[in-house]
Image (cartoon, one colour):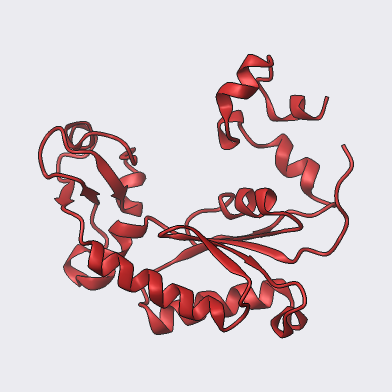
Length: 208
């Protein structure tokens, strides 16, 4: 498989455990505790986000509250606060705009950036990523972490952002692409069902 050898100019930023982490940032009493933000605080309520502490215990987005509490009996459930999350999203945008006007939100907690031709690119992609992380902690809060992926295209940048959550910073390039992809599980790709229909069950099989 040939790899695009142009310099990495694209970045994907993902705010870790978005809603839950924002709640922990706003309330110090919630820090270090397994919490989840759910559509409704009832057994059938759908978990929208779980804190890093809850994720370590197996609580995942999309689970019902009842399922989450079976995994973690002291899981604290909070109902969403959209105004609070939107405020953080707008602060996020302001920080990113300081480095490049060429960015697009992929969701309330994810952004795709293109630094090609921008003055900030001269700093180096990793330096920009480190500065963005620092700016987020200074402007939004010290409990907020983001995972950042760098690559020549958006798909690889998003993949890189998921390699070492939370608070990761990784680049996929021509020299590490095969090694990284050989270590990924198929569920790390999307859509999984399409690969399965083609009898592709492992990442290296994508190259054949």
